[in-house]
Length: 68
Image 1 (cartoon, rainbow, N blue to C red):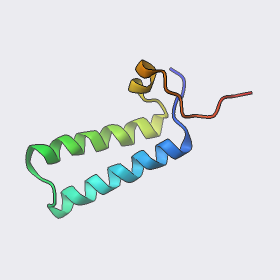
Image 2 (cartoon, helix red, strand yellow):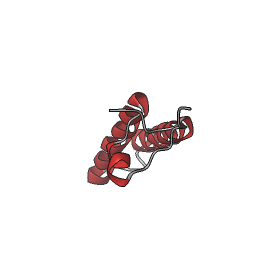
Image 3 (spheres, one colour):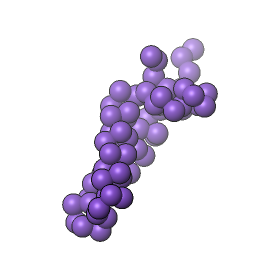
Image 4 (cartoon, rainbow, N blue to C red):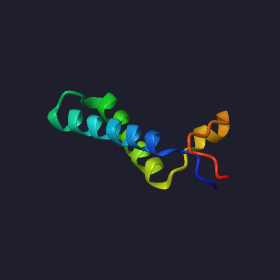
């Protein structure tokens, strides 16, 4: 399992996760949609920390710079 996420991709995912968390905390999103978005935010944080996105593997996407 090699890394397939670049720094920009990780930063964008973290920002999205923080925005979702804040919106949920403030009550702007709630209910089932809120829980689904919180789970998605958790996945974004997890994939950002490990630098690997399983969906990228399925679609052949790699946003990290190639090693020379």
